[in-house]
Image (cartoon, rainbow, N blue to C red; front, top):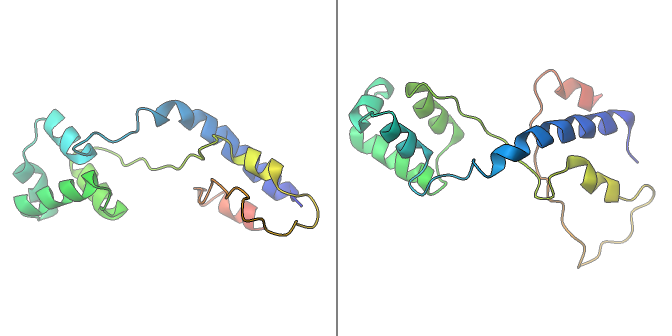
Length: 138
């Protein structure tokens, strides 16, 4: 059963997700990764970006390669982005594009026995600001 707090949180998420949907197609990473693409578009060399991070050129190249294959940490990605005067924006969007739609399908009373063919939830994590988190946890 949905509580008023959960209903309010889902409505907030749905509003945020609708604003993010137009960005989804543009957010697909370039083949060589965002770090390398942005660095070269800004006309910066690897040593110019590596220097302020106290990295070697090769270490930055390794980070760029790790980012392109999806193996970089968010912390490293954020630090490199900051040196290039960029902000890291990170979000998850459910594949069905609605946080509420999944919960509308959830049973309102006792759950039925699990089915081996039932669909798995498409939303696995959401971001809430520090101010919103206490509201959800009440």
